[in-house]
Length: 292
Image 1 (cartoon, rainbow, N blue to C red):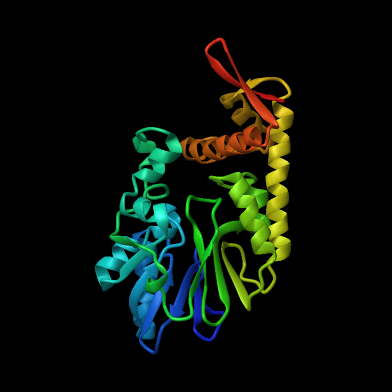
Image 2 (cartoon, rainbow, N blue to C red; image 1 turned 120 degrees about the horizontal axis):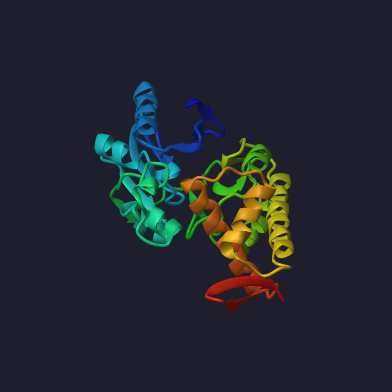
């Protein structure tokens, strides 16, 4: 863990729970793509930088989930680097309380105000084309989170953030977090057609070929959608649908999983309703989901 792996003439990634991209700007300066999960991750990155004689010029955050921005505050404090994040992700990065508040749907209890869902705040700026290193471009990857992006470097390495998961991750967790299911599927269809020298997903192995894994993630989305439809043949409230999915997939319920999977299931319900496959009925003080 936290081993540096080179995947292009100037492109690298740091092996960690959510892979951290590293791009060498010149002999002495580098930028990061994401920063790891917390202060400890930031320290380990700093050790790598010091060992190689690299100065950190900037961090480019793909999105604002805590496991991708958790090292921001420490690294910015140590190096005075600039931090850039796209769209609303910048606001979540500057005000991390927004993530657990969004997931919970109100002010989050202490059980949710921890480093896995709420990073330390850092001073981020909105990402614009002119902020990028020469030859690097932004790839919009909406769906997993609000304005998530990936990056393609000058040496044709594509960092894909959280737009797909490994087969092992899908088998273990079954229901991966998704904010906008329709946008997520569109993103995966685009990723499936991409070509690059190397693809670096945050939660899967680096590879030269991404299409098969993208299709696997697409198939999982439709599987979950079909399972929800089947569950709603009898009108059910949200909590009953969530319970059924946890039991069917043998998932362990705790506060963190409740909000992560729960938020995702609500997104599935919205997607299915917009597609006119589900509808709602209000009965006896409850909102019930039913098939059309």
